[in-house]
Image 1: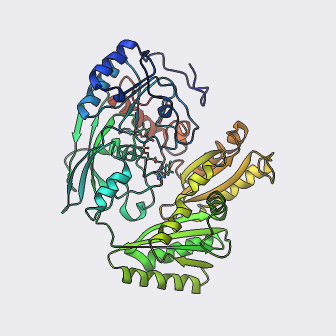
Image 2: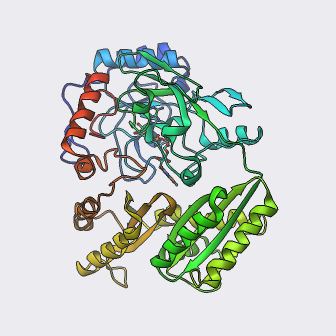
Length: 491
Ligand code: FAD
């Protein structure tokens, strides 16, 4: 056994091989056919392939069994059995992760959370929501909208990703600037360890200084120490007024000035400040056919969103901010959304980039944190390097189609994306590890929000020192001594 995407990774011979008896056990435990997608026994019917390949179609595993437990108790029994039989598993939510973490590498059993999808409680006074891990992010947010609240996380994959998957990846998203990270908003969680132990830490308290805050370990652990089954999260009131503006700017220096001004002038109502380069917007234009929001084309664009409680007051603030930045020559041109349709249309120029890129072929994705002044320099340097190496050119014979940069400016988080006609080892070698060395020199992070998965696991040393990696390995060994939870990934 070797994996297609990672020829150097070998299947761990200590793991058990799935048998028809194992499948019979799971069918007996989980009941109906839809809870067990089985590629082992002769009566297998459902298609197993969607669970084997990731959102980018970059990583493909070879599972022959997908389990969809409906309760924490079922997860506990599944994991206990797998642990005793040393059958490796992969927790899977909406399978929208971008680092190959949610699909098997070899024949690991997929434990999918889609049938654990109940909202358990919501307290209007405190804003605390308790829900199962398999609730789709958008469904949770709609439930909250009906109660005048907001899920404190929003991202382009909201229609498919699960809140358990969001917590497992510590997803950041579009409004971290305003609502903070899941490390702060998740108040409690319930998880199951590989030996079947249920970790009941579903606190709904804001404050709880009674010992180590162990739930934090599961946030961002990418399914390597346990499977999250429930989440308690504090949700803010839904803002009554949300406004959005879209700017064109001539340089990254001006982008930084605009950001400083936005923080100063919009202060408490600022809820997103996103950066898009000219190339990324051209790609959205080409893939959607939509007319640009502004007349001219610019090397940089920003999307600024405000969320507050008074529409008139917020609009006034935003208009005077826009007047100021245009008067000072910081922003070359700008537009304010006048209604809900325009609001959605402007957001699509930002949220549509990932999809526009996916139509071009393969994408090498680097989701990184860099100190703000040098944030965009990485894109310029990468473009120059790939051009010098002869990978970028005007016609179809060149493997690279586009080098683009965009991201969550307010969090110093850049998405460097290199779009290729087909995944190409030569191009990959030109980017990696060069890109990680570039980031390390600036004390950045090689993975700001997408995590390590299998894509970045070899590169953790560029952002964490030996002591930190050793401590992480000790924790992994403590929680998962047989190493069955999402193996070959993370550390
Ligand atoms: P999956 O992809 O199924 O799993 C992700 C990882 O978590 C895997 O390692 C898996 O094993 C583990 N896991 C899943 N569920 C559990 C569980 N219950 N218990 C333990 N481990 C589990 N990310 C951002 O941070 N910010 C963004 O702005 C952003 N935008 C995106 C936009 C698009 C269009 C796409 C496709 C992805 C984007 N992402 C973004 C990536 C992001 O990580 C995921 O979208 C999301 O957080 C993953 O949720 P999921 O349910 O799909 O998890």
